[in-house]
Amino acid sequence: MDTVEGGTAFQTVEERIPPGKRPMALHISSKVDTLARLLIAVVGCAFLIVPMVALAYATSLILRQLLVVMFVLFFAVVLALGSKATNQELLVATAAYSAVLVVFVGRT
Image 1: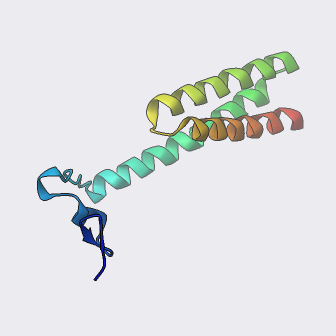
Image 2 (image 1 turned 90 degrees about the horizontal axis):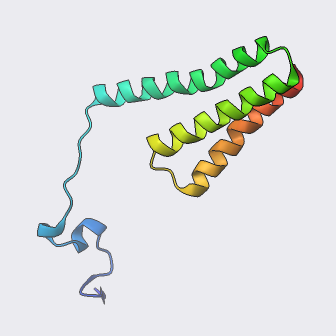
Image 3 (image 1 turned 90 degrees about the vertical axis):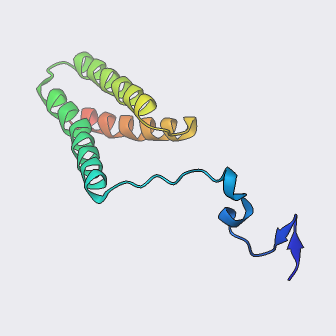
């Protein structure tokens, strides 16, 4: 078999890393995974429902626009501090979230 940089051509990443240098694998139990998924679902729904309810009760356009700015900033900060997303992913997620809120403001 052909060798590539000291190993065979068909080695996995784990086989190329020396045994003493391999990172420890983290095991997450199914209960913790389920709880995390449930928490993400609840927070995701709250990030959409709470602003829409607040915007539905806002009377003036200026107040609606200020609420959109506040909710978008809050969303961006929570996402930036609570995830390991890259800058590009943060920008895309924030733009998509603000688009949803702006469409809601335009409809009411």
